[in-house]
Amino acid sequence: MTQIRPLVAGNWKMNGLKCAASEVLAIRDRLSTAEFNPEADVLICPPVTLIATLSDLIADTSISLGGQDCHGEISGAHTGDISAEMLADAGASAVIVGHSERRTDHGERDKDIYLKTLAVHRAGLMAIICIGETEAERRAGQTLDVVKRQLHGSLPTSALVINTVIAYEPIWAIGTGLTPTVDDIAEVHGMIRQELAAIVDSASAEQMRLLYGGSVKLSNAAELMAIENVNGALVGGASLQAESFLGIIAAYISDQT
Ligand code: PEP
Image (cartoon, rainbow, N blue to C red; front, side, top):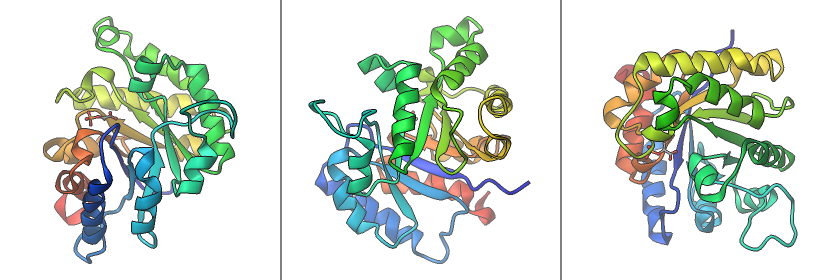
């Protein structure tokens, strides 16, 4: 089986003014050194206001940029919304869809995420589909059922390994410093890997990247990234500073793990 190339993605959420470009420059400069050569792709999802500017800064580097959400349509009367085509035009190559903060703050449901994912694919970009259970659902023993339902409801059967990534993000772990146990993450990721076979083509089911997200930081990155079927991380808070984000990316430098 071909090795899955991991992805470390930073979600800046609603953080970052123009001056935050200095963090991206620091990441760029470090990644261009011979001694810092991770075996992973690096993606930064800044606020949409920064994508075009940052895209000039990272041109000809291995860093990619992504949006944090998009509308399902190409254009039209949708004040305040952004289409996947607009994100592509600004320099993005990926879009996060279905983040739990979108699901909670904007009432997005699986069928909305499904349509947004198709829109991301239509624009030729890669969708990072977020799924994950609440604390109450975990306590009630519903984690696997909830994640399975979200996966089936959000992932189009046409999704391919090259244009789709799944991010398992337990909601109670986001921004709290809490993480599931290694066994719990392995169980959920194993289930997702298995379920993919019933949704997408077999090559995509085997190779699609499954990210873990929720309080990934320097101190736990190596342990979390070593879990079976964890093919990278979606990082919130710790992606805002170059040093902490680079520390997580370093989990994928072979002589440091
Ligand atoms: C996120 O919001 O996607 C996330 C994983 O946040 P944090 O890393 O801060 O928990």
